[in-house]
Image (cartoon, rainbow, N blue to C red; front, side):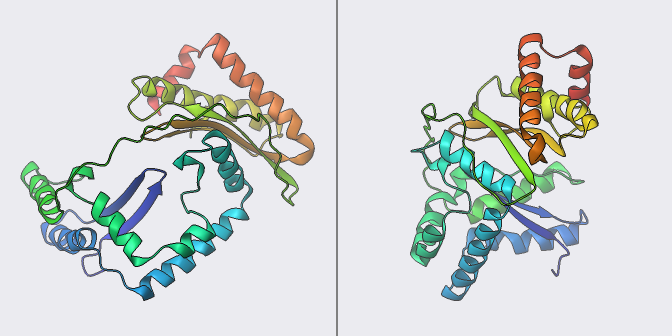
Length: 274
């Protein structure tokens, strides 16, 4: 607070990201970095803090169960990655959250939050010398150890191809997905471009331009989750329950047309310029 910096945290199935936004002015930036380094390099947690965080996680988990899109995503991950760590929600389960101890947290922290596992990305109006100084302050604060082992995730083909989860709502959420490529696969850029064309965060995607004008879908998007050991590709749409079968057929047609015919030059241009 004293430095005016903003902190945010995001967690994926195999990555924790801490983001700090600070003023580029040297005095403010130095104050923010000086405050952040000990926070991440010298974890200090009490039972009171743990109890509070457990309650907040349980509340967040309950909220996710009341959101049809999140419920659908959790169901998809459980089907696609059954028997692997990726089948579990990032938030965990009520049982796992309540079972966490301070010792569990400290053991995990000391094993994984160390110099070999960290990646520091700096973007801003600073010179190279300042960037190196910031990187050095973090590197010196963390202990050195062994890098985390590579996650060798080899999911099996799911035994089911359609699941209906009852949810009391006038709208239906449709989620179609399959296992995708891992983080370091050389074809990921091509797949990401194709995903943008199909239903990425742009008003010119095929799903948006095809479904929205007909008024049958309120949300149509394609997502690509890329993890260290694997990945997941999915298409989601939300629509009136009476129109669910129409939207599903429409999504499958759009997808198959893209697979068989490929994108147009205009589609590629739109994706590249996004």
